[in-house]
Length: 146
Image 1 (cartoon, rainbow, N blue to C red):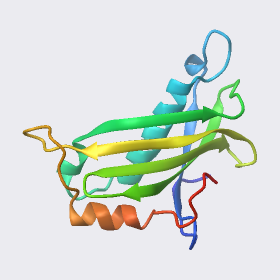
Image 2: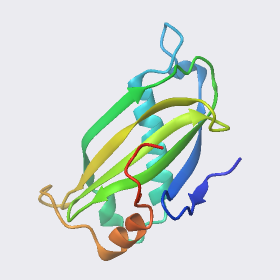
Image 3: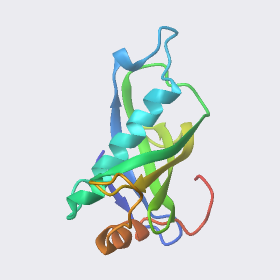
Image 4: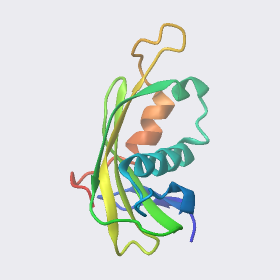
């Protein structure tokens, strides 16, 4: 088990193994949509951890959609696959799939979009060239979730 880039010609993605803790489960005993979003955020942060330009870390979450496919009902390790669906001047949309550690059971899928913000004005701003190059390397050529 290790986190890392899967360099597939049509479906490049970053794979992150995220621990699911007992206290994340609801009183009904399952992981809810908000918790899935937190695991996706952790995966994207792990992908972006070595970004050279720290101003790229000033962004707002534009939208997130989570479709639950199968419940997570116990602590353990969840696999989170992340890729880039679209990137434009100031917005980047990530696709994701959360699954069992071995990838055989899909738990949730969806999309998370962020908009880069100018650190002073908090208005939309352009991504740097290095950000675009790094994220375009993770851009999916086949537009589907898995």
